[in-house]
Length: 418
Ligand code: ADE
Image (cartoon, rainbow, N blue to C red; front, side, top):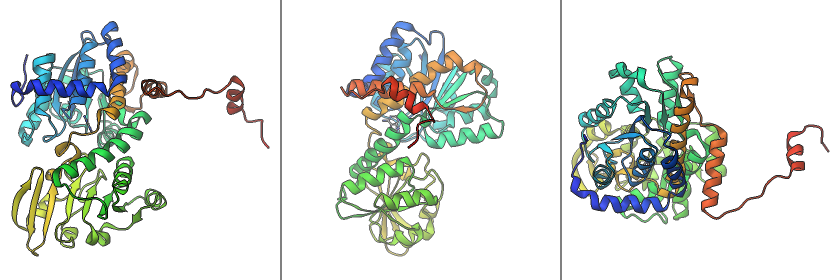
């Protein structure tokens, strides 16, 4: 079996982490049991480009239980948990090509390595696997039945490929399932982002002024959790509806160029580039902390930051001090990459359970129906989304009400008015 990981002897710790995560992933556990009986993926190869975490390990093990040959590479050079990678290789026989801290060339070499396995299905987080396949390995496209995409940024890229007629196979946007974005993006990003900031800095949020750039589902989660810890939270937005939503959710709203002057902590979660640049860096207070929880490290302009820096030093793990020419010091966490996965462990398994249940069912759907689909980006069918919510409620021991037949008729009718 081929693999490229940091150190296979880290497997013992990795296996414990995978087992711990599995305790909080009961829905995926149920799917795994069914897959083990039915073997829906027998004879299929699945290449995955995901954050290599203990939660991802449980997804890979689930797919393998269904009979698939699974290979993994990282979707971010800094998010790989090397001990988990070691355990996947040594305890579960799953090929992994990922090392925490790998440079850009190695990152893309690893993507090419999982593509060499000639996948029938791709699983992506950010669309680097799909874009590499469509640009550098086009000879392998004929073999692919379909793919899934985990995150907002990836879905945006893939929709753009579909619109330009470049996309050569159907994609299921797992991100767009309600059991994904309402929970993973909001509660997962909310908690894990603050977890990353706290591990990297140990700052006190109570009384701090925190700016959240972007009020999508991730931004909503981050703002709410920061407020919960007692921070005075500001939101910056470009979308007027979201800005209004932020205001009525109880946050202060203003343009970054004006409000950055008062920030103790700024968190970018927009999915867009150049949200913080030289114009802002020069206005920051001494000691301001900057970090990003959007998919790519483009939101904080590191080139601009370096250009106005006289001295840099690593002051704590994942916390870099930049001494600016104006004498002020600012702190960049996790090199401007996803702070929740570089400085912490990503979203808790409890929410990844639903995200990865979506992934597992999306792969099964593609194997059954992929050939009937066009080369477009689809949502997972709604009944599967609801099924995941029902299973999650069951595992939490929560019962809910059911409509009576009469109520169903009422809801479906138009005749009854005042
Ligand atoms: N994305 C965010 N959190 C994650 C996690 N724990 N595992 C995999 N991908 C993630």
